[in-house]
Amino acid sequence: MKNKKLVVGIGLIAAVVVVAAVISVKKKKQVVIDAVRVPLKSSSKPCVEFPIKLGSGTALSPCSNAKVKVLQETLNRLSLPPLAFIDVDGKFGGQTESRLDLLFKTKTLTKEQYDNVLNTHGLI
Image (cartoon, rainbow, N blue to C red; front, side, top):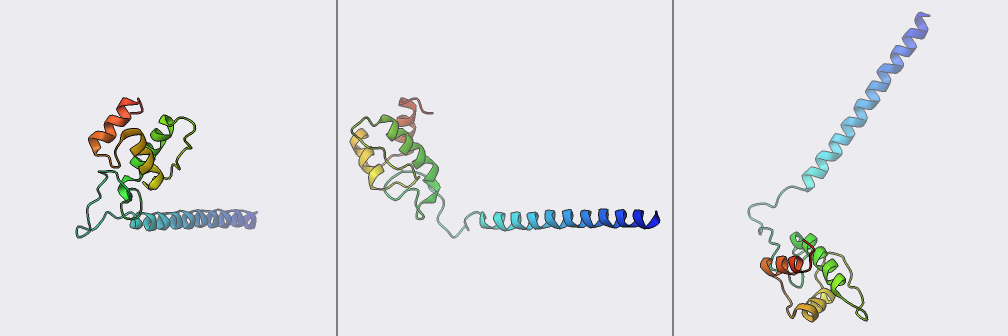
């Protein structure tokens, strides 16, 4: 009977150690993930979302990615056939620029213009 209790006790201790190790590994992974998300160094350029223009949302200008996606979704909602949908990828490329120029007669958007486009079409 003592041996059975001893085996159960050792089993519980082993289970606790395994759970603690898994938690430790998850925390270490989180630390690595958090380390990747370190804010830009003060010597780097600040993150600028506007104006939204050709190249926004790319590696050269990653801050505006979410804004470009919303703009692309808006442009798709406003485009009637025979216009094809533009890719909603968060990158302001040739398709987005052409559609923006076609619908709004501009190739770039300031914050005020962006907010106006979304407010006018009931998307904000």
